[in-house]
Image 1 (cartoon, helix red, strand yellow):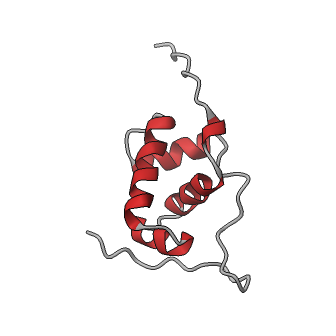
Image 2 (cartoon, one colour):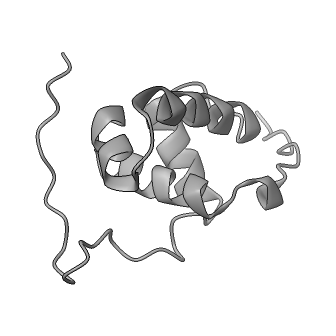
Image 3 (tube, helix red, strand yellow):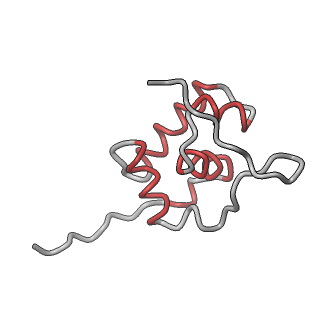
Length: 96
């Protein structure tokens, strides 16, 4: 089997907020936690994740994180920090 060439993905459409969402998603945060940390609505985060999956051609949330890593979208970001400089702690998701 030969690998098929990957179709081009427009990374310029992935803005700073989208990169933050990707980083937190990759770190395992739930949509609700991401929304709280970034000061966005829960539904807004869900829509943006859906749009990112379409743009990056990922079939699900796990695939989106892997795809973002593969495309180098996560390398430029440092771990998310609170305003005091302490690393954010991951809180367990309440969603089943």
